[in-house]
Amino acid sequence: MTKRVAILISGGGSNMVSLAESMTGDHPARPVLVLANDPAAGGLAKAAAMGIPTAAVDHKPFGKDRAAFEDALQAKLEEAQPDILCLAGFMRILTPGFIAKWEGRMLNIHPSLLPKYKGLHTHARALEAGDTEHGCSVHEVTAELDDGPILGQARVPVLPGDTADMLAARVLPMEHKLYPAVLRNFAAGAREPIFIS
Ligand code: GRF
Image (cartoon, rainbow, N blue to C red; front, side):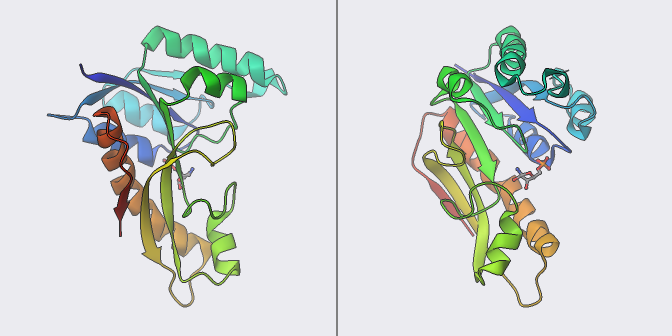
C-alpha cells in the first residue's frame, strides 16, 4: 500500500522539493499535501508547480495559543489523511499533545550531528566549539525537541576559514540526499539508520 506523506514547511522548502522529487516510480510513498505555517512561505509555490496540494495555517493570529494553532493544522491534515508527516524546515515547536497524535509517524531534519546542538544556530555553535566535523540528522519526532530516535546522518568536514553560512551551504545538499533516503526506508517499514558522507 503506497504511503501518503504530508510535508510541513515554514520557508523556501528546498528539503520539501528534494523529498517530493524522490517520491516517484517504485518509491513506497507519494506526497499528498504541503502545509505551511506562513502563507508567504516560498515552498508553497514550488509545491503547487509540482502539482502537490498545498495549504497554509498562519500561526501569527493564534498568538500564544499553540493548541488552537495545532487544532487548525490537524484539521488540514485530517482532510489529506497522511500516513507520514515530514517536518522540512518547519520552525514551529509542536506541543507534546500534537506529537502524541503522530508519534512513530513524524520525521524531522535537523542541521547538526544529533545529539549535538539541539535547537537553533547549529552551524555557528559547531564552529565556536572548534569541531572538525559537522552535518545533519533525520530523526523521529518525540516530545523532547530534536531528541527522537536517529534514522540517518550525513557528515561534512569543517574547513579552515569556514563561516556559519559556508558551513550551512555545505550541509544543505547533504540534507537533500539524506532525507529522501531515510523517507524511502521509513515508508518501506525499515528503521535501520542510514549514514552517508
Ligand atoms: C534547513 O537547513 C533545515 O535543516 C532547517 O531549515 C533549513 C531550511 O530548509 N530546519 P528548507 O530549504 O526550507 O528546506
